[in-house]
View 1 (cartoon, rainbow, N blue to C red):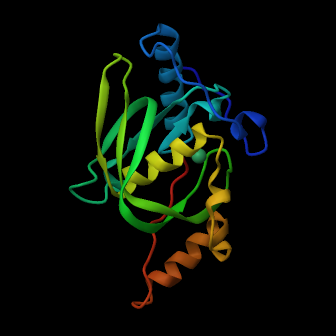
View 2: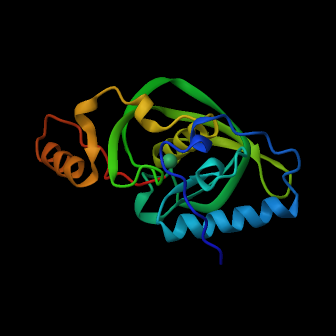
View 3: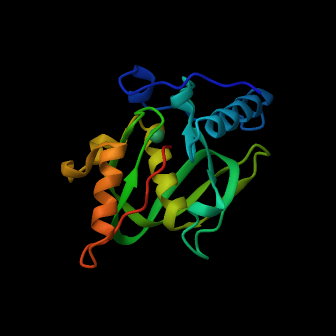
Length: 191
Ligand code: NI
């Protein structure tokens, strides 16, 4: 098991576009993916993109543990990898999602995201895989895809009153959940 160093916000590798992977079946890519999954699980996190481990390549790993599944359309998944991914929004519905990022430790924010996306990419076997995602998986895909384009979630924040230290934001969410007239966001998970 190899744990990789995670780049933090401000490091240039996080702020530029990552490169396409020419050969997804290259054993070096498989090794990188194994190490990224180890690193994600150790963190712990729900997703980790190439640039976050100083690899400017278009891939990310992810996992949805059973307790983060948001229903039958959002089953537990992974850990798995998506190489050279392409995301396409389904419909135009935008929902607020509470997000953290392993490159921005200790912080959480409410981020507007597409409710549903179509995803397509390649696995380590070189084969195309695709599907539709909603719930937590949809959120992870959009967050990790942004990393490949050098975008960190703070640039997508609209409601800056819901951007802050994780303990404070979680306390706010818990307060909102106690009020029936407001929608509670989830508890957030770094990715
Ligand atoms: Ni992240």
